[in-house]
Image (cartoon, rainbow over all chains, first blue to last red):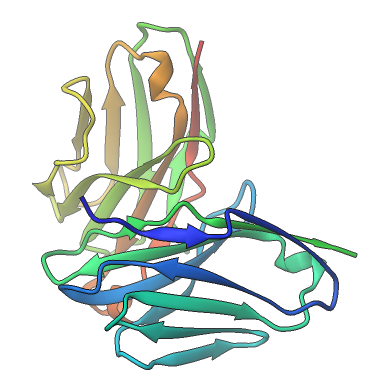
Length: 112
Length: 116
């Protein structure tokens, strides 16, 4: 069983605050780490696919870093907006197949 | 279509009833996955198809769960004799070999199944 953990489980911030959350995953047999953003009643939306140790990716105000040796990734949101309110999921893929193993998600709520 | 389409969006089933959930993947995507997301948890893998071949069904929780993709496009997840613990959101995702390496998997909006 692959263990993918996310913290915190939920987070309330004020509009304009910057925030970050963590995903930890197995450090062996690493292939890729995915981040998804999932708003209620919508489809999970792919944010990043990260493959290289030390990788840093950015999309607008959202960025992510990857440490495959120690098995963690951080997702950062700069200047949170109410529309950033969603559940952020990370998913680990090992080199044995195409399946993703998801963490439990971090539910972000941004208050105006 | 432009995205992955799942139907129905919502399904209420009486305990013991059989249900069938449909997934229309993006045209040309060879890989198709089913995930189950229980309340408060992350999605859990159920099964994986490459074209019409079911390559991994290790996540199916019991023999009441059955999935098929007979022509390598549309897939159906069938649950027989539904139980309350089957209540969850069922997500379908598809990808091409190229897209999953660069963009990740494309998910549908899910089917929310409630067994009463």
